Image 1 (tube, one colour):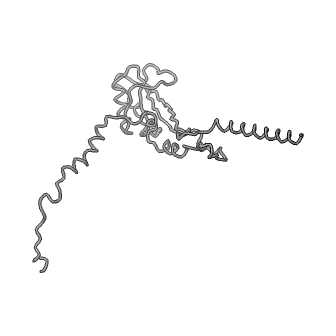
Image 2: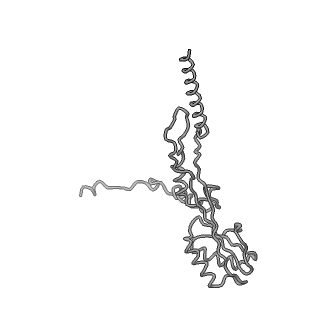
Image 3: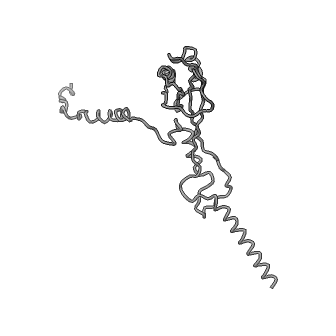
Length: 216
């Protein structure tokens, strides 16, 4: 009798431990094909306050702005905005010309930044985005249990990590690229139009070849 009680007790303990472990694993298992590791896009705003007049930005301030853009390594994906209470067209024109040297345009509106703009000054804001996948790589799972039909802890790190690293503009991960599409449509139809307008090779008949000329 005591032997049976010991066996029953040991069986109950093993069963409870198994249930406890399975309950712990269930909370972290992903049984779908959607990866839990997804790219995250972060925005950072950089500001520069410049003195402005009714005629726009003075020459020294324009040089300051150009040097600042160059030190920032301004490039594709960066967004430029102007925080100007007067909404001066001359200031916007000067900033747009300097931004054009880097192949960028000035956006409409400006993001909210810390502090306030002093009277007689304007604030140029450069918004830069960065994409990454938090928690990757994840090798925390030492033993994979395929019987539960769940993905591994690092599932999605490779593909989503590469996408986040290679995308030219991280904003496109949020809402895609926008544009009029006019240039794209015109460019794509050039090859099709050239193919359709090309005359068939046999339209003008076959060339006449004399058999006597070949024997000379």
